[in-house]
Image (spheres, rainbow, N blue to C red):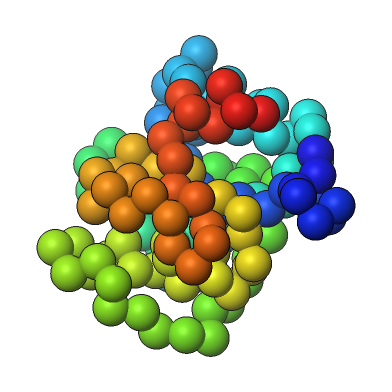
Length: 140
């Protein structure tokens, strides 16, 4: 799938979307993820975002370290890791969300996909559209 400039479409998935896509079969987030993989959409994350994902699996879903490692290895088959070079302080109410914006800027992503109201309420940041998974599924 191509972006407006003719290159591959680039996206960053927020932690809540990754959790939904990985843990809930048939979820909108999972359907969207499969669609992205089939269409060769470039999916980016950062070390900080993946650490948050791993911590949520352990803390909120009681996954052990081995299971988290296996899931992370699966993620690396379709996620490209990027290290942001800019620190942002855009989301004041939930500063952890800034790492998603940082990743999107560093990867020159076209979209951020999130369920988080702190991010979706921004709508567009530096030309990057912030949408929910159901919108992404409809658009792509």
